[in-house]
Image (cartoon, rainbow, N blue to C red; front, side, top):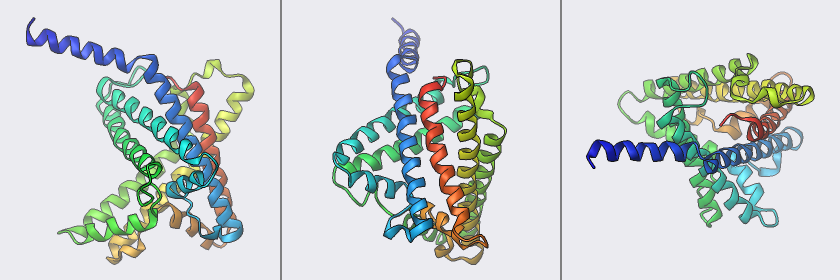
Length: 280
């Protein structure tokens, strides 16, 4: 048996694994886990809007800490981390073999899937590390992490340009997320024909409202990174928690944060719809 034949068989086995029932279950579990995190982040943001939050963080670390405080919270964190590994592996399979759909084999889509694999792999690692007792991993402040990374980048040659371009990329990504949600681009990824009219309305409400709110958070965080680059001040950079808190400093007071927080909860519910109806 020659090397080419062995490589062909190996690729065939990998493709079968990527299209297996286990991979589908992992992807759906990952969407469910993502939904739980966003619902908790939205709920924490609502606490901040109405009562200052009581020192809790409205970000992934805050959500993980919130789960850990509950009965059987550590068990839930282990399950959450394993589900996120399923999501990461599914994204890896998309990067290697393409996504479901007629245009799923495009290089740009594969590259985006690879980026999502890295992201969900990191999130899974942070959740599992927290569950294993490393409270400084998954539960760290996103604001401090953002400022530390920005400060390090600003110290590099051309650091201001690097941070500024990175901030612009995040801001553009946020706008892209919001626009695609408003245009309901997610329809092509969902089994819309299997939904009742009532479920379809719920999917569109949570998809549009949730996606637009999530995009607004990303775009705002990117704007703060650009400000940090212009002023050469890492303290201007903000993680999700401080970005959400900044919405309370608008002329409408905390009510804009209330809207964004409800939108993040909606995105969490939309993720649960993905867990059921996503084409995997």
